[in-house]
Image (cartoon, rainbow, N blue to C red; front, side):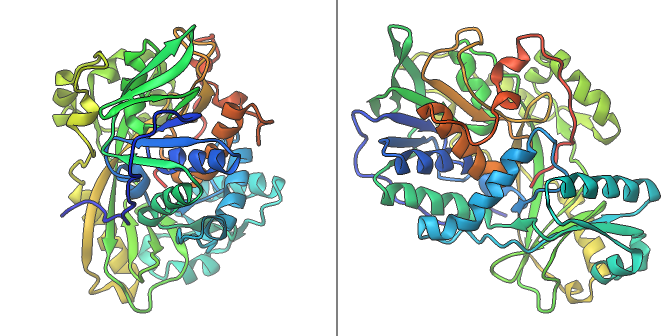
Length: 450
């Protein structure tokens, strides 16, 4: 089956010779940053090697959640939700956002106690989450065989449509005077007097004063060519789209065996809540020490293997010149094979629990690669302060499966840093140099696609 079908966005007619800021990557974070910048009067060009939102920004679950967040992300997520609420009106385009609430089932006493702690954390931020009793939870999960003992319900969690959101924001960027270029890979960044002065794309050069690298799993490779170390790995998430179902639940649900949310088209997005098999790459060994704390915390949930991704990475060049054809031009859109076994199991659990799904049909299945940092917290940062960092070069990546919901706030924070405006939240937890200045790497939350 093909990957998700995105709404199309037209390219701008010509590559500009000069802009204030070039955004590398047309995912949810890149287009959100571009929107912030054009609204502040900056000239912006988005350069996307493939299609707007075609990789993980359209392949995620579509959740916009405050629950189960690393405390370091909470202020930014609160800002993100505020921005999601106004996004359709602000852009003039539909993103599918709905603050529908999310229910998180607990199937053991220990899991229920953990959800009770989560509720207390949320309530400390004035989020009205509450614990559902077993009877209340069974209204959402009617099959007793699922073993639900209770649940956390957060009415301020929500969902949006991944295939709509990034294209909608990109259209707004164009509407407000920004420039958009798909199938236009940036090969490298040029500097003058030690500062960013231009990018070289496969279609020509753009003079600029600032560059934001928002390339998801590709960001490590791009920055590595500039001599900047970004300790990023990738893992795979798997998703299936179910054709419209009459009488299915309106709410968004998470059970240890599956997740499900209603889509704007009346269908459902259903996925396994269990991690898929992690495919080792050469970077897995290069970055082993940095990722060891996360591996030790998550080892019960990690299944390792060597597959095509390992050999693809071995064949890919790690360094190139501005005149070379780059890996970004050779692989426009990452489209890995989905884990059908895990998706089948998740759908079977849903069919067993919800009568309207007895005859549910799979419309599409796909997978996507998630960009993961050692502490499972993103980088939204200037590059000054790390080896070979350059004034004017910024990065927003490594969202570790949390990026769709965080995208709006991450874009705002990145724009704040680029323009020198007072940041919307404290940027300290997201600084790139935390991986090189001796800071202790502390993974708090798991790697969960949303």
